Image (tube, rainbow, N blue to C red):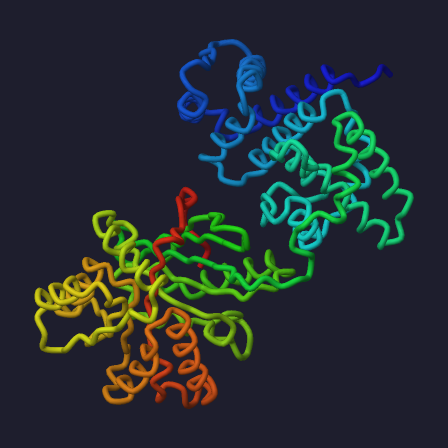
Length: 496
């Protein structure tokens, strides 16, 4: 059997992409082909042209399409992405991404034979271990694994396409180094030496011998060292727009200690009654992804007006357990405004107030709205004093209350980032709690004091917490510097 040259490997990869594409349900239909070609042209630019499918064999036309994509910069990734717009994370799409990553890895390592690495890397299948090793290898720039990265082999291929500074060890080679460390600890020294030998050869060819030698001393967050920067799970509930009882649930995960890089998850449609169960499943899946994470976790609900009166902070996880756990027991939970995120005209005052809140907390203060006040004059007074960063609402936002809606909108127009209200109408008890929560005017004080009042309610247990004001506190805290980013396309109805 002849040597597998780089040209032969590339031809084999293109043939594999063609086989996978030919099995795609999307590409077997003309309407699907037209959509994918339209998206490909938009992403790759008008300079890339594709042959129109004629009456010839489908596989032959597919092969021409694949070769056209391969000739374009990152064209195979674009192909996987465009098919994914229709199929989400189908087996076809995951297979296309794996092949696209291997194509990039073959190009990155040029004439090097990658396949001797495959058996040992494929033997590493623990998602939490792979995530931990990937974070180390990428200096925490890669926080989560892609859906198609099931083994160390797929992770290695994926990292081969990531950029690094000229004198920095490429992430794929750094990954081999940390995998070798793990193998030695696991008693697999022979396999570790195979990876190191291959890595040393690449380092010599690329002039990275010093970078390889200095890898162990390189500065990065050591594994197991907890970060003080919280991780965030953003959960957005967007009204369907047609069916008033249905909502699209989108979410983003953010655990990057070095910056705000939220990762969008799947978007699904649910009936309102099924939302608590959907959130429970989402949190369980997120906790599985974050099994090795030692950062504190904050849950932020991005809610439309009609759900602000819903006690989402007290929805439970592990609903099928004999005693479910209220979210506020395990997480700091705050609300955000879906309406404000979508209304760009409200963002300038919002940004200005947030800077006041963050940069000059000692000069920031709260304002109490009155039940019989005018929404017009409330907005005027808020806008006249740029030190107001928190508004205590006179009543809970309710869909059947016009004054409550006007009060809420006045706060959003004025850019107030923090809103506090009582869902139960407990009067004096709420005023006492609110006065304590807003006392120091700072961001940390709001979160800590709200958590303390909720913990007091938790201490009473399910049989007594409804009578405590902490059970009914709602805190909306909108940070304009932490926007969720685009959501994934909706993929249909979620499971009840």
